Image 1 (tube, rainbow, N blue to C red):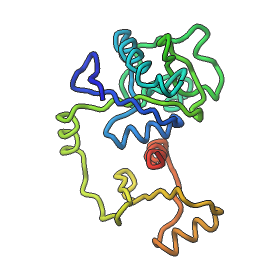
Image 2 (image 1 turned 90 degrees about the horizontal axis):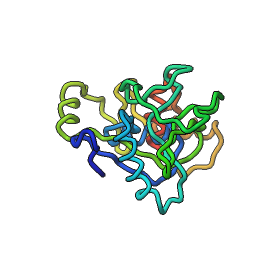
Image 3 (image 1 turned 180 degrees about the vertical axis):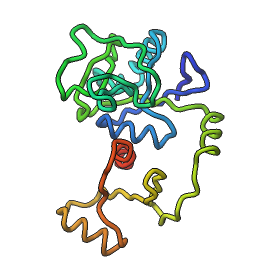
Image 4 (image 1 turned 45 degrees about the vertical axis):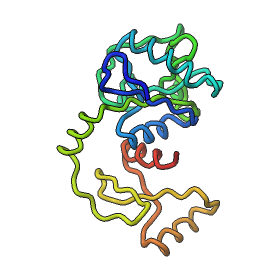
Length: 203
């Protein structure tokens, strides 16, 4: 990880594993952060210089950051909730098409592009420093119910989740497997936050 230019207490995590936008955000959340927001031109240039080196072997033209127009339809915002007060769009961007719903940054020019969130790209997480994370955890974490080994508790719903990647079965067989072996069901997703949490389990 590399310390942030404007706030050395925060760190950037460069992830070469190409992922869809929402899956990338889920992974960042599991590390205690989010896909990175960018507050100013200095951070944008610093981040892109580091990303050029980090993703060079990946041969990636661009990478995900935390900008999306899905949270506030028709408006761009940061998925971590910080104010969207800075942008550095490439000429002709953002494209006014519904599929272009997430922000990627060029590894060579540092300019921003609106891309389809289902595209798979490397990405950058912004992880708060240890002190900030610890304080937040102490003040907000509830005692979870007891989940079985390898299952993950999600505080917003109060349920335990587990991802299975080594199966190639029908929906009906998957539901039967969950019920017969764990007295549970295939997940139903009710909002974007839950979708991000579940997506992050698949990386």
